[in-house]
Image (cartoon, rainbow, N blue to C red; front, side, top):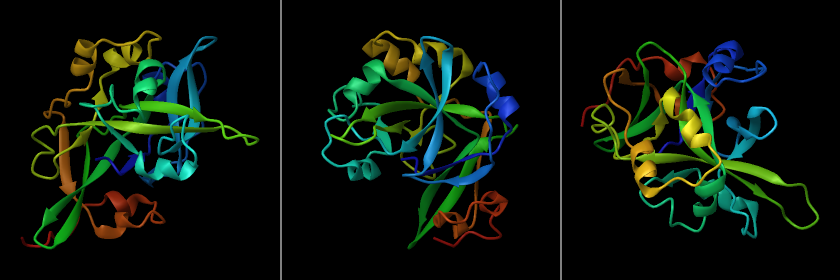
Length: 227
């Protein structure tokens, strides 16, 4: 799964990567957690692409309560087209979720050791995401999102059995396009990212607490517990 990630680069860099008409205002975030507000990039028929903020944890349009979103932070790419919570969104409401790194936890003996995974050149990238709009009777609509996951590449395999789907820039437009994607297209888009430009290293358990949101979260751990 993907349960925490970072977004620390400037709005100018993100505007260039995502081909936005305006530069978004960004505060560096080192420990983005489920149920928090997060930025997404999605198609807009007027401007081409829209930068929006939604809540992380997808609430299907048919949900009775918003609390279901806390269990819907990720969508498995292998079953996303069939699952009732995600199948409409993967057809019509796909988005890009900007990030520049993410965390996964490796079981080492009785401990779970957090690792930070990013590109060696520190460049930002996009998770493949889905978004939904939930409209409870008599209340304001709530927009939410989920991150798609896939099998791990060789960098992630020793750490965790899943990784988030990272879309190369040349695939952004296809993912954001208005048409429904074929099974073959989904299989190609939602594959593990090649491992060569990526690295992973252990960090302290400081990241386990969402209230810790500072550069200390991504610092290399002094030691890793023995197995």
